[in-house]
Image (cartoon, rainbow, N blue to C red):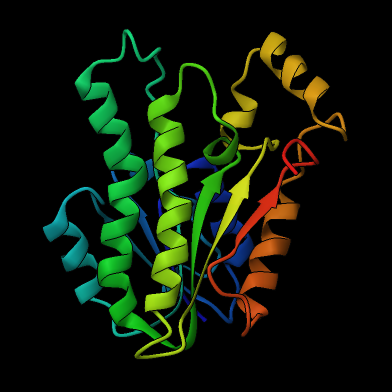
Length: 230
């Protein structure tokens, strides 16, 4: 498969790169600021790395224009700037909405032109998009937006070609931000998870493989969270 991972320098992106780095796959990986965080693949001859600011229309268009075709586009971008709404600046709001939502719009806008018949687009979201969180309203709004965007875009993508668009909403995992929480917050979250633990990353790739094997899954938000949100 030809696979494009938008946001390959982040925790989830790095993990997906490692798992999808096989002889059968050709990888297109992107980063914005930290190229050193891109995993060095075993099959480097089948890997291309791009510096792309996915909030910049021209940069996104240029990245996809250099690619002939894709079987799978994975969007896993964004960052947080937490604050209470009463103290949140307009810049904090705009930055988080842009990095978590506009990025997906531009990636899908130009990426869909490269996806082959029966190809897939997977948008990664968060459990917070449907549960909310005090002090992270900008992030929550963006993730909720991704999920609504995915449902509508999925219908559009069935008109010209059969391209399947779905989202995976993650709970707390032993990867990325899940490793950066304080012990106090980590314990508090685990107490609210029925399984009383963070998820193993391998659960993520299992769902990615399931989604890409399906030819009937359309516009779904698949939650993996250990029962924290049902």
